[in-house]
Length: 598
Image (cartoon, rainbow, N blue to C red; front, side):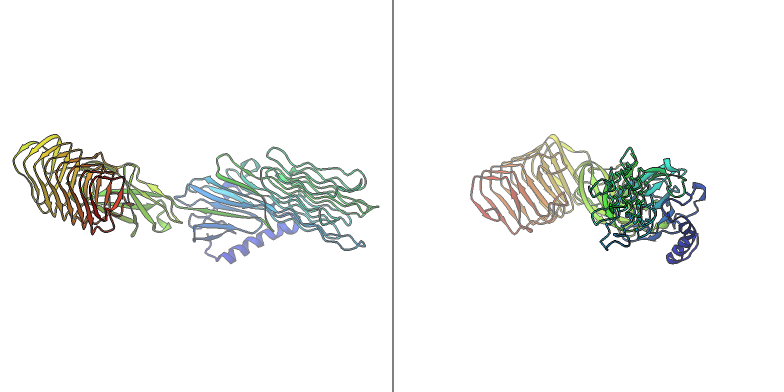
């Protein structure tokens, strides 16, 4: 591949095409199709000879010169988004000497086909960009994809070229996307416009509905058939239907527009049909004596192969020559590693996601990664040099199937780890079942009281310890100061519970993404100065409750404040100094409420 600038590459491309244009006047259809073997573009420069490659906001090849070029799918690319536009039909001359000057009708606008195509690395696509039809003059009509009305003093515009994308051997049966061209205008009045190209059915051209001898409009191409032509009943030449042969060279070219009819005896000519999946029919010519007007050609239809997704076929949107815009993203893979897969309850876990490009030469992915625990979203973390790390102490006891989803950026596609990374949170020893006497949780120790278990005696959690109680009965006071984490689920506590200065999460009752349910507290509950987040939910409390100076976020990203929800309180409730303000809903309190709990 030459290292020439885009400007010089496009100049080479144009000079290569000029001999064809000069010979036939039919840019959209007279190019000899390339074969797959002729493709030499590299993945680094995928845009062929005339396309312009840009990297922002997404990697893009833009083809805005009429003619045929190629796109070579880069490594790591599995889909391309293509925006394809058909050429505009040529306008009419408006008058024929020596008749008075009047405005010429416009040609139909070209259509747009937008879709996503599945591709494979190294695959070559051929793109043909249709030329705008040539305006008529006071002499023969212009030529294009479907020529305009010819003959002496015809003046009809030629049809606009259809644009298409082809795969495999690049012949007519390999068209996977087509954008219809607009029909050429008929001459003889400002209302004789060409039909708009595009859509499942191209628009019919316009006719004057004048007296016998006036031109009749060409029909728009459809999904299944070319647009019809129309004969004139008196002097003018007939408009021909859309055909699968180039109207100038007679070479095979599916979807060519029909030719507009000549104006009889120096009268106005008809417009040519636009090219497309099926070409539009040409409008028939008018004639003299009587200066009967010609009629507009029909627009060509558009098409998208069944393999295409996110398809939009728009009619009548493009002025001038057609164009093709190919955008793509490079694929990625995501791996996930945890610094430990068997952490102790209350202790930190570091989980790191690494995002790799399927094309190493395409740069480094940017953006963010979302970490999930099963179906529960944990956090979204920005990438730093293709890595994102999430650290948490809030995992509850049990299994956690962790996944990481890269959310993509303009250059790289989103991706998710193919299988979960299993992290199982446990304890330093088997869970307590039945125990009599004081129970102490020491620093760096994570201890649990098992479902069905009974603790008869006081429980103390010392600084740096962590305690989880599930489905148990505790007959004795529970106190903690500066613990790593506290979880109490579906349990009955007969004596006072005082939890202070916990650095990690405090969960009493129901919590999102857990199997926790509410507890029964029969004695006073005090929650003071816990800083690692707190949720107290779905509990029954028959004694006074005090919640003061707690802070920190919850188990889920959206839980930004300490939470007190769905509880039944049968005594006084006091809440002060919680930051942000304590989040409350669904509580029933049968006692005095003070502070933030009013």
